[in-house]
Amino acid sequence: MSSSMPQNDTDISQNLSEVRERMTASCDKWDRKPTEVDLIAVSKKQPLERVEAALRLGHKQFGENRVQEAAGKWPTLRQQFADVELHLIGPLQTNKAKDAVALFDVIQTVDRLKLARVLAKEMQAADRHLPVYIQVNTGEEAQKAGVSPAEADAFIRECRDELGLKVVGLMCIPPAAEQPAPHFALLAKIAARNNLDHLSMGMSADFETAIQFGATSVRVGTAVFGTRAVPE
Ligand SMILES: *Cc1c(COP(=O)(O)O)cnc(C)c1O
Image (cartoon, rainbow, N blue to C red):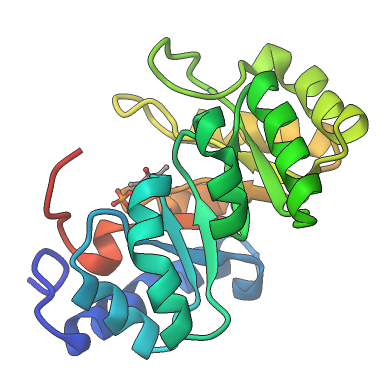
């Protein structure tokens, strides 16, 4: 019950503990260290009380998928809670790149050259050289953001070597109707051959599998906060 309708801090506390326990169990099973895997609590479209509850419990890493929505709540929350690390996990329009650089600590969704160029310029201008992830469209879905697996190596090289972006890892969202494992394995393979240490993969439904395949960040929304107010 608690995971579908959190009512208070106790529910969020229980949800966070359950997710942590499942992460630890998966790490034990696949011979990984629990300290290698970060839990990014995805707070998009959640009532503020639930997000504040997680912050009061000491949780620090959060993910948002829209610049505007994040801009509406995080500047105030950051004044109340120190050391928050905010990740952008949704598509970024170039005209919002400047705001994103000011607001976020990590940008996980660099997915095209035009955006990479604008981000490099805005980071230079703000003197804020944020770690970024390259989003890979592992399922090559027409409607989904991300570079294709075939273009990934060249794109990573360009972002890193030509534009000077601080590329730390790769991110993917597997096709909803497929087994995620082959997508996670593919992302891990592309990261390894490009010497990238970080893999952002796995959501509420599949984070244990993502850990099996090397995730260093899992992005978990509903399992922490419950059902979102407005469905996607
Ligand atoms: C919403 C979202 C998540 C979290 O999804 P849940 O199924 O609620 O865990 C993770 N990653 C991205 C990119 C998202 O947009």
